[in-house]
Image: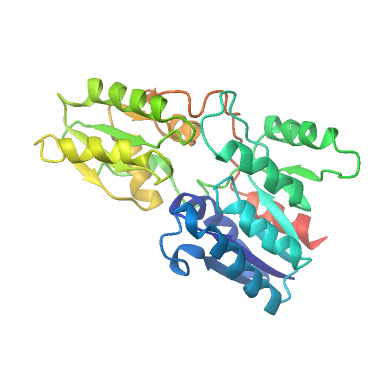
Amino acid sequence: MKVCFIYSNRSEFAELEPFIKFFKKKCKIKVVNLSTKIKKIENDENLGEVFKKCYNLLFKENFDYVCILGDRRELPFIALAIFFTNTKIIHIAAGEVINSVTSYDQYFRPVVSLLSNQQICFSNEAKNNVKKLFSGITYLKEKTSVIGNPVFSDIEIEKLINPVKEKFNLVLLHPQSLSRKKTIEDVKKIEEKIMKKRTIIIKGNKDKNSDVIENFYKKIKNEKNIKIIESLPKKKYFQYVKYCDKFFTNTSSVYEIKKINSKCLFIVGERNKGRSHEIYNKKAPEQLFKILNK
């Protein structure tokens, strides 16, 4: 079996990494990080390059499966390239739905699922959402499996060490790409909460309306109690989550945060309203391998 994993940003890789590590031991794999191949991939005008790069890559190599994860705006272009090379698409983390549509992602995830041969879900709710998606299309059939999310497979939460000596709050804010107004509202909510206490800010993604958040960070970057970090590896990020007093965020990983530090979470805005409760399963990579190896 020959499998390719394609991703384009750090959050995708964090969830794909356990699958990549396991599959590497069991079969031939190729891992493609598009952010190293396409300049400014976060800019919408380069999405055509995503299709071209992926199509040329996959046309030359004969993969049994290509695994892609989530709902980033690059994914439909990756999926279409895979589709036109007659390679089977495995959509990992399929079926996540947000009740109030606040980002492009909510349009893209269903598109990728419809193009895929198998939809791999992290929760039973997500599986039901995929079934509903396919129910109105008589000529397409879903093939869903719930295996859970292995994001903690290489992390021992109880052994995470505090990276900061003093008490602190944590901030991770993403733009609501379909609403500049709501992104501005989210920034105002954050500003009201963080200015009087030691605060560590992790920068979010660069989707549409991210300039609203960036301008706010520029305004406060010289404040003595503020530290702004570009990004963090997964383990370091979890260390900050575990030991922060309050975590002000609209990130999609709300249930990861609750598992690590149930008391810290302060959800900002509606970007992840109604997200399904993920199952965490360290053996998920093994289960996916068995599914595909059949």
